[in-house]
Image 1 (cartoon, rainbow, N blue to C red):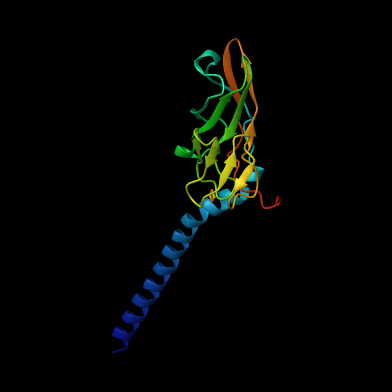
Image 2: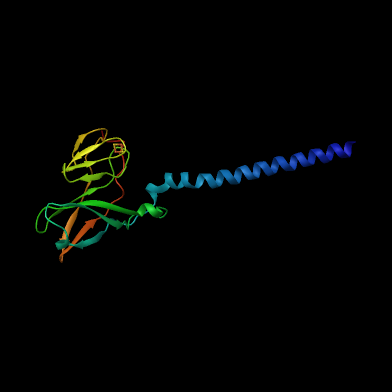
Length: 170
Ligand code: FES
């Protein structure tokens, strides 16, 4: 009788330890993204770089078009999110303006409505004027603008991290 009780006890002890070990392993795996997120400000990121968007003469004066590019500055685990785009407008022979595609409310990609001259956010109805300033809806700030230059006939964009909400700004 006592042998059976000992056997049951040791099996129970073994199962309890296995549950503890498995819980610890699951917890460790689940904590990796959280720790990576907390450490991300400390990780050295490559500097923002100028990337080519195409020949300047392929863009029509006054037109706003979406240009896709591969962001060279994302976090190592960014994956598909490194593929992004900007809204590019030719404003002169050698001058361009580039706006982030991400809404300043909750980062949904905004659309350009040429007939109205507005950027519209499909998520919560945010509206921006052509210069990126807020026209209405929940966005707290204008669309971030990127630095653009023309060199040797090529439009170049200075990349920067995806500009999502900054809690320090209104
Ligand atoms: S994410 Fe654009 S209005 Fe909410």
